[in-house]
Length: 138
Image 1 (cartoon, rainbow, N blue to C red):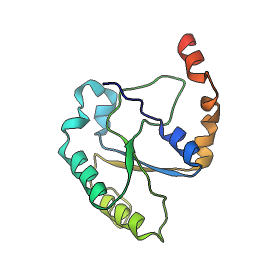
Image 2 (cartoon, one colour):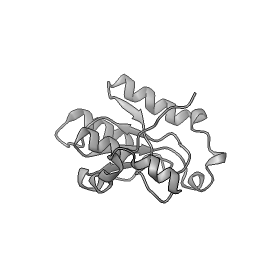
Image 3 (cartoon, rainbow, N blue to C red):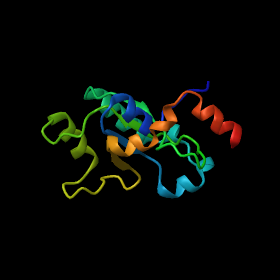
Image 4 (spheres, rainbow, N blue to C red):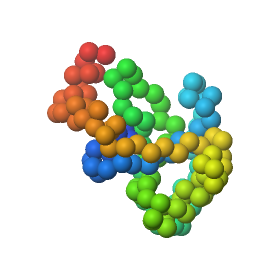
């Protein structure tokens, strides 16, 4: 059944704050999304289970919206937790994903921080009828 998945920049604008975003797919899979099935990736499901065990909310999320085109959903998620080094829950999440030097524990995962000011660059996408007009002109 089709599901509407929000772009990460739209989520940031809705929350009016910076947001966290995680990709699970190998970099090479991004070039050919037809060969990557996020629903069978055990590490992704294990991480989602970890989030649930720690009471951390998440939702599916598309990358930053672009009027240049769109791609298939590859299992990316928004993690509903502010980036705050004084928050023990955020620190637990960060330490689960990254080594102390900031490199990722899993090379097929990428952990992003999207500041609100960057997300606001696409605020015009929130205007009524923007995407309908875009689709007509595509």
